[in-house]
Amino acid sequence: MDLIQKNELDPLFEILSLLYLCHNANWKEEAIQSLDEYGVKGEEFFRDHMKILETYVDTFKKYKKDGTEDSFFFEQVSDESFQLVVAMAVENRYYYDHPGETDRDWLRGCLAYLINDPQDHPHLPGEKDLPRLPDELAILQFLDTADIKNEEKWHALNFLRKPDYWMTCLFDTVRANKDAYDRAIDAVKKPLDKLLKRAAVYEDAQFLKIAGTCADTPVIYLSLAAPLILLVLYTHGYQGILLEALRAEDEPGKYSGEAVVRQAKSLSDKSKLDILCILKHTSMYNLELAEALGLSPSTTSHHMNTLLSSGFVTVEKKDGKVFYCLEKENIAQFLSILERMLLS
Figure 1 (cartoon, rainbow, N blue to C red):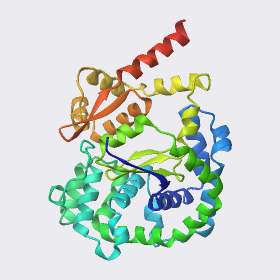
Figure 2: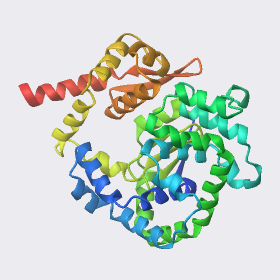
Figure 3: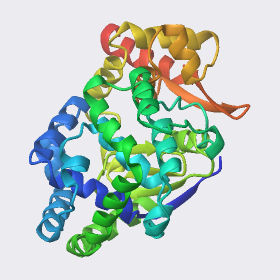
């Protein structure tokens, strides 16, 4: 498993995430609701562990600078479209450091690849293997068959038309907010230092295995702006700094019923059960599973992320591709706990 772990935050990822939170007036309520849906007591967990995030966001918001295209990046976007913005920024951070060298063809090809990403290779392809969209007609034809929701296609269309312009605007906004970020870090320095010390000795073995398999030597950063995230891109990954606290809620005797319910929810539709039945016989990569199920690659990826987070599925690398395989021990343990709760 080749990866580099950093016991620090990534300013680029943090600033982007903070800007997104600042443009969502209901972020706190949504965070609590997500925690409730996860299976912990949302308000209680937020009060005990996430007040640092509230201070972090409020301080950043106090000093933040508005960008010329904030609406495009942070308001008129779904969570999925914003994840695409983040992936483009992180995977093209070279242009953040070299703002005068943006390459429209590369950025357009990279964006098109990420839109239809099959998620079965641990690295971005070379420029010659990226999609080529030389004109408006090619862009429209690409989007006509792209694996993307219809309501998100307008955003993708504008992004694809002039990716160099949009990335320049985005990176200019990030640079303009470096001072606000520094002030926000200063405002939470003491509790953040404590969390960083705890994170230095905490290891999420499952996540590290996934990160080391799904990407070639990724750099793994901690995140406070997205404190419960587990995200693996091609060159970078992000691990929420409060995940240890969340995992502690799953310890025996503490919300154990909710943990079982959460795993059971991951089997709540036929497609996920079909995936597990297929993987019982053989491991497969994402595109193979999508074809076997008659689903789009993005829908299959969504199902796989749910099954990965529940521990029912894991990943392995074979012949340069990322394969999903059944985590039989975890499934057996889940069934054993369920049997003990209901039948013993």
